[in-house]
Amino acid sequence: MSSRTVPLGRMVPPRGLLMLSSLWLGASWLLLIGFRPPVQAQSASYTPGVRLMLLSIAAGLAVAWPLLRLSGPMRPRPALQALLDLAVLLCLVQVVLWPLRLVTPWPPGRAAAIDLCLAGWGLALAAVVAAGSGPGPQASLGVRRTVSMAVAIAMAAGGPLLVLLAGRSLPFTEHPASAPLAAWSPATALWSLTAAGFEPPTPVEWRLAGTGLGVALAAWLVLGMHRLVRRGPVGP
Image 1 (spheres, rainbow, N blue to C red):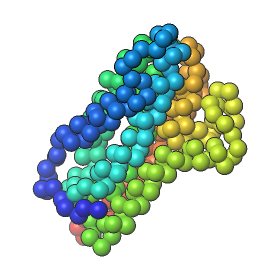
Image 2 (tube, one colour; image 1 turned 180 degrees about the vertical axis):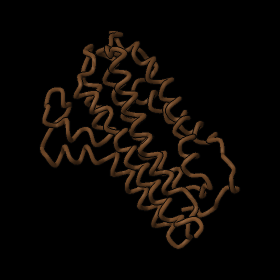
Image 3 (tube, rainbow, N blue to C red; image 1 turned 120 degrees about the vertical axis):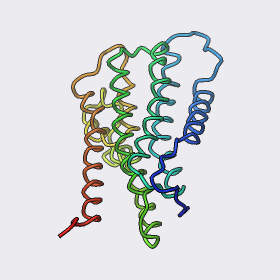
Image 4 (tube, rainbow, N blue to C red; image 1 turned 90 degrees about the horizontal axis):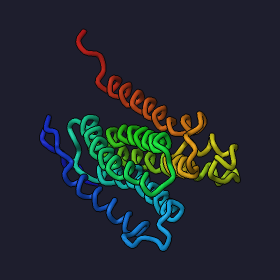
């Protein structure tokens, strides 16, 4: 992994991330939905492809983005830079998510729950990216970045693994016992949230969508405490 760094105090506009994310979204659309309309242009025809596209977005957020940043140069303001990255990614998500309601049966509340799920887990992953992409001792840089990437992968794959190990199945709307397990990954949470049709989200589904925000709060608290401990006492 690269040990270069950008100039101290400089915020770098994520132009490359914006381009790569747009290509990711375009490729996902072509592979999973395409430009040729189905024989019967109904929501039932489009929804399966849209659900898979949302999983592709979650994979890009949880794996591709951390991999890109943790393989790149060190960043002097990792927290602010990670949040700037996330703002760009979430803006792209809005451009894609809300127009998809035209080809799915989801009401605005369900689209909002999906949006909340992606934003919450994105905020949690931003803490992981910030933890691994900031400056620090060269001797521990590789270990720190490897651990950060492992945490990001655990966030992405933890929910599916828990569901499989427990012998449960998704969506939890049909199998309620899967709900606590599905909450611990953006992939399983999205798969469950997008399984329903015209119904607005239930309280259980809102909790499922908001789990990522709870994880994000814990991750940023841990990161902040670590920075304070590493900085040590200031003055006598």
